[in-house]
Amino acid sequence: MVNGRLYGKIPFMKTELEEVLEKVSLGQMSPGEAFDKLKDYPYQDLGFAKVDHHREVRKGFPEIIYGQGKTDGQILKIAQEICKRGNSLLITRARPQIYQKIRRKIPGCLYNSLGKTICLRKKRPAPGKGRIVIITAGTSDIPVAEEAFVTCEMLGNETERIYDVGVAGLHRLIGEMDKIRKARLIIAVAGMEGALPSVVAGLVNVPVIAVPTSVGYGASFQGISALLAMLNSCPGGVAVMNIDNGFGAGYLASLINHL
Image (cartoon, rainbow, N blue to C red):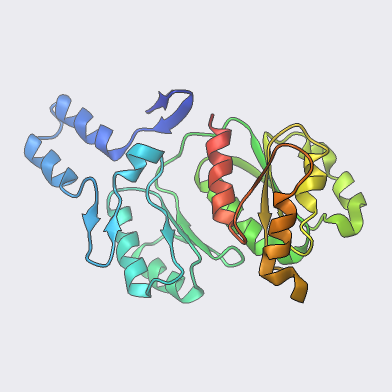
C-alpha cells in the first residue's frame, strides 16, 4: 500500500504524527520543529472544546464535527484548527448560514443542502473494499440518506444511491435488484412503518444497516415506530441505528467495508 499501513486487516492512510516522525528520522525536520508541530497532541484545548487531533491515529480519520447545538463561531474555530493540520473536514447537521461563513475562511468546502453536511477532502482516505448501496423507502427519507452518503464518500467508499423504492411499490425495489446484489453492504433508510430493511435483508446475503427516520404521521412517534419495527426485524443480518442517524450508518458501513 502506498503511503499507508495496515492495522490487522484494516488499511489506514499515514497520519500527521507518522509524517512528522518520519521527517525527523530522515533529517527533514528538527526535533524543535516537530515539537511545535505536535504540541497540541493528543488534543487541543480551545476552552469550549477539546479538539481531538489524536483521533486520526486511533480511528483512521480526523475528528468529525457535529454542528447541531454549537454556535457558528465554535464550529468555525474547530474547523479551522482541523484544517490547519492539513486534515480533511466533515461537519454534520450544518445550517446554511454557517456554510456561508466557513466557505469564506476555508475555501473549497462543499455543502450538501439535503444532508446538511459541509466537507473538504484534503487527504485521500484508504479505499473501501467494495460498494456501499444506500436505499431509501421514500423521497422524504433522502436527507438522512444524504448524510450517510457524504460520510461514506469522505471515508473512502464507492457509494451508490437508490431512492424511493419502499414497500408502497415493491416492484420499484425489484427493478433495482441487479445493483443491490452488487453491494458489499447496504444502508436502508425508512420512516413510516420501517419495513424496508427487513424486505431487503430477506433478499440479499450481505449486512444491512437499518436507519429509522422521523418521517410519518402521528402514531409514528417521530421515528419510534420505525425504530421498533427494525429492532424486531425477522431476517438475520440487520443492524439498527438511532433515529435519523445517517452519519452513524455511514461510519459503521465504512468500518465494515474496510475490513
